[in-house]
Length: 418
Ligand code: EPZ
Image (cartoon, rainbow, N blue to C red; front, top):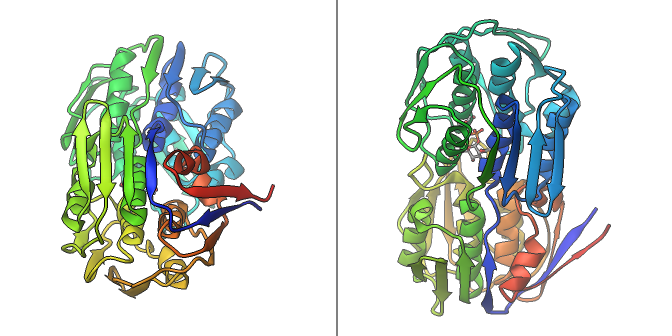
């Protein structure tokens, strides 16, 4: 297995260009199944989860060709509507393929996506919405047997603004007869990116970014070249890296309007963040202050994916910060590892309280999940001595090259192992 070795104590200074967004490219890769012509995705990040999605597309008979960060997908050879259990377990968000396969093929067979490190990851809202559109879905022995000979557009109301369910329904609606309205839709920027891709292919769709999305189904999608939006959570990670280590960094392509709740908290803690038309410049020179309670919520609330990395940045701040994790049931797995580095954190259910520590010490720690692993790297920048981060395959699911990016910002980090 590989590890990251991080020598803490260096103030950051540098510039990087933020990678393409993992949580945008994954649903868009599923959406390419709706397009019988070629799709070329620009600014596509090389991630384990993208590799898993490409493997799924190829297992269905599609072609996928990389050229740098451009990925060309051709679905003309699609000859299957079944995804193997192995591939479904590779990546939790593989459920996102269901809506697109049903819209294209009229049937689908896939196993329940595995849970993950964040706790159970149910898809009941996905299935309920697809059934409302007319899909027949039989669940037997962990396998979903789905038929949708005739999806019919209608109004689908989500009981909660699930990102994945919203995306699955947008894709299924493209294959439904007539118009579909999705009510109480998730409002994340990645949903708008998916809409923009579908619109670029010729789908009459509108409303993404609001809680009401309308799709006119039955249109033939045409050839499209589309640029993936920058990854706002990767950008949040680098902002928190500067907050943690001190110094200054310029993050090209970072868009403040997608990060307003994160930049607000970092400014409250004492960081200076300036937004210009190229991106964001973050500076931290003084000791950070504790901030008002941080409550995670669906967009535009504070993103659950930034909870662990902000916690890591505040480990040496003055005072106590209360976190409340309201999206996932098991998203404090990074706390024990941060404690090994000297973090002073108390967890009670959904609440975690971070008391500022005078110093952090480098330690051997292990990544428990994608963002928890990134949090360990953020904390290591402020620790005295060497931190070894193990199980970094979790981190490589969502960060194209953390060693490259942290090194560009002036951090002392390198990778060991195979
Ligand atoms: C997406 O996951 C993201 N993943 C997650 O990012 C992100 O944390 C999450 O949205 C929230 O913003 C991708 O986009 C690939 P949800 P998703 O459906 O779609 C419950 C990362 O680190 N729920 O909005 O799975 C669910 O259990 C990852 O990049 C149901 O109960 O999120 C969770 O508690 C982690 N039934 C909550 O809703 C359902 O049918 C939010 O889930 C669906 C979801």
